[in-house]
Amino acid sequence: MLVCCEDSGRISLLSELGSILFEVEIGDRALAGSISTDGKLVAVGGYSKKVTLLDASSGKVLIEADFGVVKSLCFSGALLAAGGKHGELTVFDVSSLTPRWNCHRSACSVKELCFSPDGSYLAFCGTDHKIGLLDEGGNTIWELDT
Image (tube, rainbow, N blue to C red; front, side, top):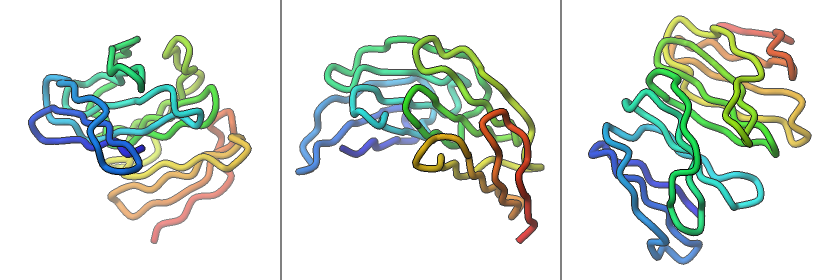
Protein backbone atom coordinates (compact mmCIF):
# COMPACT_ATOMS: atom_id res chain seq x y z
CA MET A 1 0.00 0.00 0.00
CA LEU A 2 0.99 3.62 -0.53
CA VAL A 3 -0.12 6.80 1.26
CA CYS A 4 -0.41 9.88 -0.97
CA CYS A 5 -0.58 13.32 0.65
CA GLU A 6 -1.81 16.38 -1.24
CA ASP A 7 -1.51 20.11 -0.65
CA SER A 8 -5.32 20.27 -0.63
CA GLY A 9 -5.38 18.16 2.56
CA ARG A 10 -6.56 15.04 0.79
CA ILE A 11 -5.04 11.72 1.82
CA SER A 12 -5.35 8.72 -0.48
CA LEU A 13 -4.47 5.14 0.32
CA LEU A 14 -3.57 3.13 -2.78
CA SER A 15 -3.38 -0.62 -3.16
CA GLU A 16 -0.32 -2.42 -4.48
CA LEU A 17 -1.94 -2.25 -7.95
CA GLY A 18 -2.60 1.50 -7.71
CA SER A 19 -6.34 1.45 -7.11
CA ILE A 20 -7.70 3.93 -4.55
CA LEU A 21 -8.74 2.17 -1.36
CA PHE A 22 -9.99 5.38 0.29
CA GLU A 23 -9.65 9.15 0.27
CA VAL A 24 -10.12 11.46 3.26
CA GLU A 25 -9.62 15.17 3.93
CA ILE A 26 -7.55 16.27 6.94
CA GLY A 27 -8.27 19.98 6.53
CA ASP A 28 -4.96 21.65 5.69
CA ARG A 29 -1.96 20.70 3.58
CA ALA A 30 -1.07 17.05 4.08
CA LEU A 31 2.71 16.60 4.30
CA ALA A 32 3.37 13.15 5.78
CA GLY A 33 1.90 9.68 5.82
CA SER A 34 2.94 6.24 7.02
CA ILE A 35 1.39 2.77 7.09
CA SER A 36 1.72 0.62 10.22
CA THR A 37 3.90 -2.48 10.01
CA ASP A 38 0.80 -4.72 10.18
CA GLY A 39 -1.00 -2.68 7.48
CA LYS A 40 -4.02 -1.92 9.68
CA LEU A 41 -3.35 1.76 10.43
CA VAL A 42 -2.42 4.87 8.48
CA ALA A 43 -0.87 7.88 10.22
CA VAL A 44 -1.13 11.27 8.52
CA GLY A 45 -0.27 14.85 9.34
CA GLY A 46 0.68 18.24 7.98
CA TYR A 47 -0.44 21.81 8.53
CA SER A 48 -3.48 20.58 10.49
CA LYS A 49 -1.01 20.47 13.43
CA LYS A 50 -2.27 17.03 14.40
CA VAL A 51 -1.11 13.45 14.07
CA THR A 52 -4.15 11.50 12.89
CA LEU A 53 -4.54 7.71 12.94
CA LEU A 54 -6.89 6.22 10.37
CA ASP A 55 -8.25 2.70 9.94
CA ALA A 56 -6.53 1.40 6.78
CA SER A 57 -9.58 -0.56 5.63
CA SER A 58 -12.12 2.27 5.89
CA GLY A 59 -10.28 5.58 6.24
CA LYS A 60 -12.19 6.28 9.46
CA VAL A 61 -10.41 8.59 11.92
CA LEU A 62 -9.57 6.57 15.03
CA ILE A 63 -7.65 9.07 17.16
CA GLU A 64 -5.80 12.39 16.89
CA ALA A 65 -3.07 14.09 18.89
CA ASP A 66 -1.92 17.71 18.83
CA PHE A 67 1.62 18.04 17.57
CA GLY A 68 2.48 21.05 15.44
CA VAL A 69 3.20 20.98 11.72
CA VAL A 70 3.97 17.32 10.91
CA LYS A 71 6.77 16.81 8.36
CA SER A 72 7.58 13.10 8.81
CA LEU A 73 6.03 9.94 10.28
CA CYS A 74 7.29 6.39 10.82
CA PHE A 75 5.74 3.31 12.46
CA SER A 76 7.49 0.51 14.31
CA GLY A 77 5.14 -2.00 15.90
CA ALA A 78 3.36 -0.22 18.78
CA LEU A 79 5.31 3.02 18.21
CA LEU A 80 4.81 5.99 15.89
CA ALA A 81 7.48 8.66 15.47
CA ALA A 82 6.55 12.14 14.29
CA GLY A 83 8.97 14.84 13.14
CA GLY A 84 7.97 18.49 13.05
CA LYS A 85 8.59 21.66 11.10
CA HIS A 86 10.53 23.27 13.96
CA GLY A 87 12.78 20.33 14.87
CA GLU A 88 10.47 18.63 17.34
CA LEU A 89 10.45 14.82 17.46
CA THR A 90 7.96 12.73 19.43
CA VAL A 91 7.50 8.98 19.74
CA PHE A 92 3.89 8.03 20.48
CA ASP A 93 2.26 4.88 21.78
CA VAL A 94 0.06 3.88 18.83
CA SER A 95 -2.87 2.62 20.92
CA SER A 96 -3.53 5.99 22.57
CA LEU A 97 -1.26 8.49 20.76
CA THR A 98 0.22 9.25 24.17
CA PRO A 99 3.79 10.54 23.89
CA ARG A 100 6.41 8.10 25.20
CA TRP A 101 9.14 10.73 24.79
CA ASN A 102 9.89 13.89 22.89
CA CYS A 103 12.90 16.03 22.13
CA HIS A 104 14.18 18.74 19.82
CA ARG A 105 16.62 17.33 17.26
CA SER A 106 17.08 19.87 14.50
CA ALA A 107 17.25 23.63 13.98
CA CYS A 108 14.89 23.13 11.05
CA SER A 109 12.34 20.50 9.99
CA VAL A 110 12.77 16.82 10.86
CA LYS A 111 12.59 15.66 7.26
CA GLU A 112 12.94 11.87 7.57
CA LEU A 113 12.54 9.23 10.28
CA CYS A 114 13.32 5.52 10.24
CA PHE A 115 13.19 2.91 13.01
CA SER A 116 15.68 0.04 13.17
CA PRO A 117 14.11 -3.34 12.31
CA ASP A 118 13.70 -4.21 16.01
CA GLY A 119 12.33 -0.74 16.88
CA SER A 120 14.99 0.04 19.46
CA TYR A 121 16.68 2.85 17.49
CA LEU A 122 15.34 5.81 15.56
CA ALA A 123 17.32 7.58 12.85
CA PHE A 124 16.47 11.15 11.89
CA CYS A 125 17.48 13.68 9.26
CA GLY A 126 16.83 17.42 9.41
CA THR A 127 16.65 20.04 6.68
CA ASP A 128 19.65 21.64 8.43
CA HIS A 129 21.71 18.61 7.21
CA LYS A 130 21.90 17.11 10.70
CA ILE A 131 21.50 13.33 10.94
CA GLY A 132 21.49 11.16 14.01
CA LEU A 133 20.54 8.02 15.83
CA LEU A 134 18.51 7.90 19.05
CA ASP A 135 17.85 5.03 21.44
CA GLU A 136 14.39 3.94 22.58
CA GLY A 137 14.36 6.64 25.26
CA GLY A 138 15.31 9.47 22.92
CA ASN A 139 18.94 9.61 24.02
CA THR A 140 21.51 10.48 21.36
CA ILE A 141 23.70 7.58 20.22
CA TRP A 142 25.42 9.75 17.61
CA GLU A 143 24.76 12.90 15.61
CA LEU A 144 26.53 14.42 12.57
CA ASP A 145 26.39 17.64 10.60
CA THR A 146 26.62 16.62 6.95
